[in-house]
Structure formats: structure tokens, C-alpha cells
Image (cartoon, rainbow, N blue to C red; front, side, top):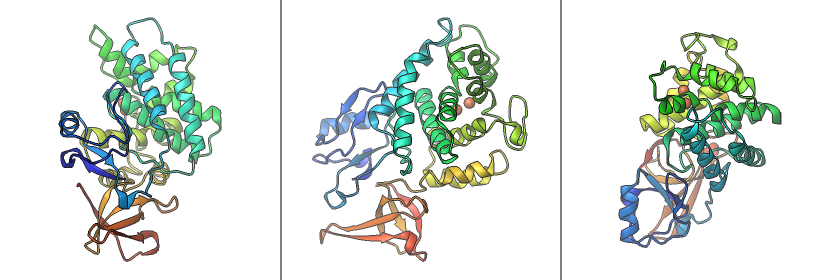
Length: 334
Ligand SMILES: [Fe+2]
Ligand SMILES: [Fe+2]
């Protein structure tokens, strides 16, 4: 499979991954052969890329850290919770408990995989962001060798870190606009939410150098869960709101390392996130282009790249981890 811009789709291409609507309903299932009408519909959606099958790249199956149904279940549960929060008394956390447990289970089961971030659905932005941050934070917690209780506390905090924004959205009165304090005040009084998870909401905009908000906490005075969520939150926000490609965001994260973000945790994050996600077409320093088909765990910025010669119907493999003289110099948006 390979990743292709929606604007480049042509009739008779086959979808290698299903397309879902914002509320999680399936629009076009995996294996759909595209027609003009489908392509027109996809162009109307807020969707930049899709995955299409490619016979020469058929062996390059994308292995994700989480399954699509698990991502969608959690996204829907969070979206429903955020729609209700503040309008009714308290929150019923039970509605997301099962979906969250499934995500934790899948991430533990797939711990040998790297994230193929960016391709986890699309839909209501705050719910999407919350689920993405939760997944990235969990992967970091796992690398940190957290036990199950710690993973649950971290995941709960990561999932609800911006609940203050949902409260603001649902409030008929003007609020303080400080979503961290408001989120904390709301969560700390809820018996179903661990106090440390509430502190993630409170502290996720604090910065390592003390320049953050709301209390200007510094260094290790910021709880590690909140420092982890700050890295994941920064990454997801840069990708989604600023529309930067993953490699540019990674470069930017490196500049924040040791200033606003904990450098040890930025380094940890760089070990779970590929610079060039699977299925991406990359430009090599040899002037050739190829598709990323595998990413070595120990060297996530040196992918395995396949170059296809469609005329000769052949592919050639380059393992960049073994060829230091060849570099990826950019991403090609097909
Ligand atoms: Fe936030
Ligand atoms: Fe956030």
C-alpha cells in the first residue's frame, strides 16, 4: 500500500484502508474500488490522504499499534463525554472505561511496533486530539516500563487533559479561559478519576524551564505524567493545527527539548515515532524516490525504502540503516 493525496486519486484505484466519517461511521470500506462519485465525495471531506493498494508494494502491510475499531470506539466515547460534560452533574466515566481498557490492551500487545501516527481517522477535532495524545502517551509510558496501574492513570489523564476546553464550550456563562485549572477542578472531585490523572489536566501546559501555565512549575516539580502528555500534546497540536509534516514537527520538538519540554522525554518520544511514516513516498539523496515499507525499532529515522520501476514491474529495497551514505531529504506528496 502507499499513501496518496486525495487530489491525486483516480477511478479504479483500490482503498487499502477504510475511510470513516467524523462520527466513526464507515464511509468506504477497505478494498473499495474507487469511482468518480467516490473521489468527488472524498475531495469534499476534510481529508488529505488515503492509502491505496499497489501491487508492487503489496507485501508492505502497515502494522499499527492500535486497530481502527479500537481507535473509533474510544474517539466516539470521548466525543460523547465531551458533549455532555458540564451540562449534567458529574461525568459517567464508565462509558469510556471499556474503550480505554481496549486501547491499553492493544498497545501492550503491540509493544514491538512503532506508531504510524497521522493516519488515525479524522473527525471531531478535540476528541481526535485527546485520543491521539492518549495513545502517544501510553506508548511512552510503556517504554518507561510503567505498570498497569500507572498506565491507567497516565492514559486517563492524557485522554481528559483538555476536558477544560469541553467544559468551556458547554458553559453558558463566560469562563476564566484557563482550561487547565477548570479541568483540574472538575476532575479532582470525581471519584472515578485518579487524582494524579486530574493533575495531568492541571499541569500539561507547564514547561520544563518554568515558563508555563498556570503555576509556572519547573523541572521535576511537574509530574512525569504531565511532562509526557506535554510532549505528546505538542506533537499532535503541531501536526493537526499547524499542518506540518512529521519530520518538520520532529525537528521542531528537538528545538523545544530542554527548554519547554523535558529532554529525556523528547528523546524517548523520538524512539516511538517514525520521522517518515509507513507508506510515505520519500526523496532520497541519490535523486531517486521510494516508499517507506518498514521502520527499524532501533533506528526509526532510517527506514526501509522500496523503489519501484513500474515499467519493468520490479522493486528494489534499500535498508537505510545499513547505508549511512544515503539519506532521506524530503517527503514527496504524490
Ligand atoms: Fe491544553
Ligand atoms: Fe491538548
